[in-house]
Length: 321
Ligand code: COA
Image (cartoon, rainbow, N blue to C red; front, side):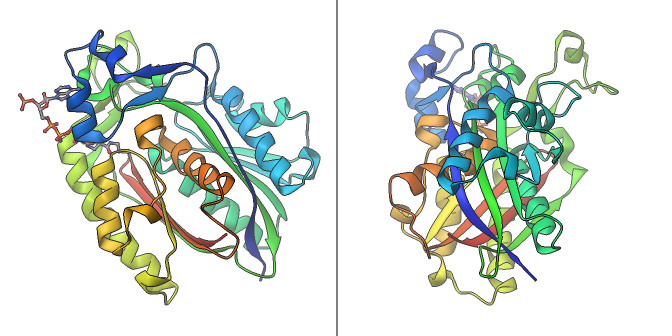
């Protein structure tokens, strides 16, 4: 059975930066509060770009690193909860922007766990022998879901895209992926409007992300601790075998709790939350790409990726780079 090997990574952030000081002028908040509670100092915000626009340069960079042409891609899997349109899917629109046709393209919506879910789908297609070259992308324009008068959410999120080019290989690659969901906690984290359903009156004025942050926080810390154990156990590995934690970047305190669980020093945790904020399904591939390009993550290193998000959804992937 073939494995998926990470042949290339890429990332892209829209150029406009919004600092905590900028947000102090918008809502009743302070730089100190945001930094102390979340670790975030700034975030990138898209202007007119949509998710497929951000995804394009990220995908091109991943292809370039892998030494692959776009027309060699068999499948595009896009993690996004801020799609360009309901359909065509954002993956289809990315395919067109890449100048290719024919290959399969689909979106996966698992909120902030979107990239881990997309990776799991991509890995399964490669392991089954169906496809040999798969582009996995996480791209989000979270700023479009923000209620810019709600200080409890608008300070947390940012926009961006990250990509990974997977190819079939006789060696791992991806050791395993683990994905879960539980919708019993919907009221703690949701978007207020959609297409066939609107769950609160605010939906009449647009779709906004709503969150009871402190309750989500507690649930996320416990759940991510459990998934670390599940992932290590599934692979017969010990904590010491992990070289790098590449976590979803929602909050520095959640990340520190997972690192403590792994007994991993923070130098071995890839952090972008300070500069990117929470870019939802883009955050893991953006962080991975940064650490690969600056030489921290090297071939042969073991990487644990994990995420938690609306749904609730959560998941992990263990890989050798
Ligand atoms: N600026 C200043 N004060 C703020 C604020 C802001 N931007 N947002 C909230 N507050 C206030 C609250 O109103 C509350 O005030 P009160 O005590 O007078 O009621 C106080 O700060 C504490 O709020 P609380 O929500 O308990 O803070 P917290 O320590 O839990 O931090 C989060 C809030 C959102 C940063 C944190 O809970 C978090 O990161 N949660 C997880 C979020 C997450 O990961 N979501 C996505 C999953 S992918």
